Amino acid sequence: MSVHFADGRIESGFQLVVGADGAWSKARSLVTSAKPQYSGVHYLTTAIQPENPFHSSAVSLAGKGLYMALGDGKQILVVKLGDSSYQIGVGLRLQESWSSENAAPLKDPSALRQSLLRDGFADWPQMHTDMIRHSDGDFRAWPLYAMPTKSLSWQTVPGVTLIGDAAHITTPFVGEGVNCALYDSLQLAQQIIKHGIDDLHRAVSEYEALMLPRGIDLIKRSTKSGELLFAPDAPRSWLKAFAGIDSV
View 1: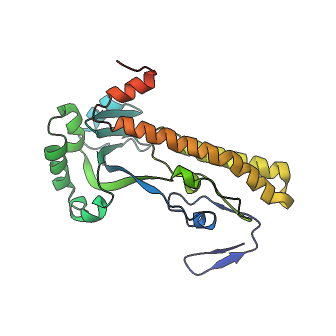
View 2: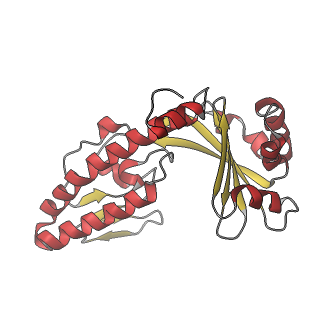
View 3: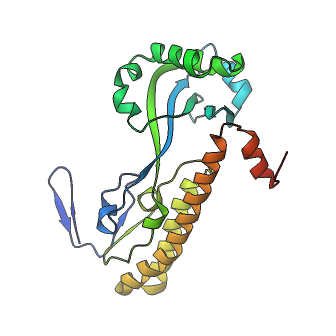
């Protein structure tokens, strides 16, 4: 197996290449022609830095974790980061092409903040809209993608396999993506230890027999959770599902 790098280098002699190169994996094309599909949801993310005078208000909402406000198919997220800043995420149902068609607003964060407050969240409580109003810095567009579950059924290809988002990218609505990727790594290592480097094909085959159903399950659960979180009656529908009851 040979690996071709962007700078023109070619390295060869590998018995097994493990694609761990994320949502837009180049290694994925070696095992399947399937590509991630757009979920219908974008997050527009910005931040509140520790030196921001409004930082204490973000602390009061999210503390050391996460705060989420949702309704009418929209969301505002406040997430504590390791540098004590808070990521502010605005979740919206947008066309897949929104990012490329709205490059100018993304480069004018002040105008984008005003647009969001005026057109998307005008009737939301001030404690939530202040998270947008007083955020600082640029916005990043984050369209969410997931692999189609029917594509997670490939035959094992000698010399290559996938882990994490490269294998089963999904939306983040159950919060298990990193855990799943780490478990992929553990199971692959266990199968290699079990069968040895002289039988890597069998090791990979048995690993993928475990990984693919688990990836399908994660994608399905996250898709369902996303539908509920962005439903017109959210958070009611999400709470009903979370509580396991038919009506509230």
